[in-house]
Length: 342
Ligand SMILES: CCCCCCCCCCCCC[C@@H](O)CC(=O)SCCNC(=O)CCNC(=O)[C@H](O)C(C)(C)COP(=O)(O)OP(=O)(O)OC[C@H]1O[C@@H](n2cnc3c(N)ncnc32)[C@H](O)[C@@H]1OP(=O)(O)O
Image 1 (spheres, rainbow, N blue to C red):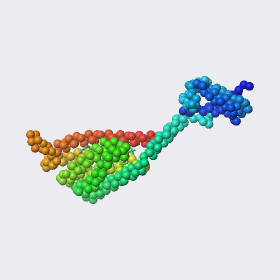
Image 2 (image 1 turned 90 degrees about the vertical axis):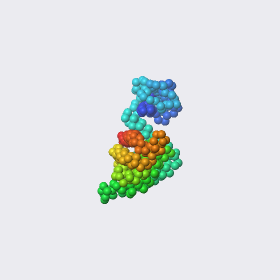
Image 3 (image 1 turned 45 degrees about the horizontal axis):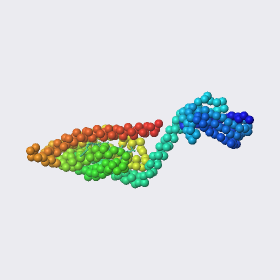
Image 4 (image 1 turned 60 degrees about the vertical axis):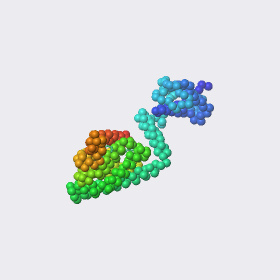
């Protein structure tokens, strides 16, 4: 008895080929691959009633028997045999297939990220700590910003002259606490570089503790107002943004502000700090405060103003490093968001 060919439905997706052989009550099935040829043999109820059915299919490339389902590209070498029909139930056109592949990849990525995240038993504690840290900073800087704004409205320009005496204690507290921003990436609490945080925290603390803190003559200058106001203006957006990060939430407007408002504020902040440094130079020269003693052959002492002139150069280097860092962070943030939206 000559074996008959069954109806075979064929569908191909990116990494898989589906062959559906239309035989019911199939028995004595023998399916195998030799090099690039698939052999099928079986008995059952098919297109010509109860019979033995068999067919062979030649593919373009050899197929390992253990990888029967792992074939790529256009795999059939011969012209489509007459008994082979497309299986539209499983059929995906190219864009569907691509989309399915992308969805699969995204699912796998999500699973791998989730499993990595789940591995950290202290994650809740870390997030709780960061949330509290950001909350305290937010409250501190909000108090500074609101206080300065209210005083500006009530007293006008007069408020410029006693900013330091009204605000300094809270600013000292917030800026001391901000040292955590260097420690956090150092101990792996936040995944970012230490350098930008170090530049910012040390730069600000230098102005606060050395320039304003040690010179009483600097404390009633209007420049204090501008420095403190510019610092607090970014922080009232930055810390609530971080707080939301800690509870896996996002407010789009806040994200946009956090990643955009530094563009005018950072250069203005550095400019205000530079003005403060320049204004302090004659005071340090006059008072000889913090001057460094040198061997008598060279002179009596090295004025601190020399260090300040050096600091002015370092400051613009710091501005350049951090501006570039903030710009990169911004591009990364909005590029990732855009990709997610597409
Ligand atoms: C005596 C020696 C001195 C030596 C130094 C001399 C240098 C002198 C130069 C001084 C120039 C300083 C001038 C400066 O004082 C002027 C001003 O500040 S003016 C006001 C305007 N300022 C700004 O706009 C700056 C704002 N600051 C920042 O954005 C950051 O503080 C900065 C350190 C610059 C960058 O921070 P970071 O690298 O952490 O970037 P991101 O904010 O994007 O965060 C990265 C990821 O980490 C997560 N993260 C970070 N911190 C926290 C936190 N506290 N809680 C929770 N999560 C946190 C964040 O979410 C990011 O993760 P993801 O991307 O997944 O969201």
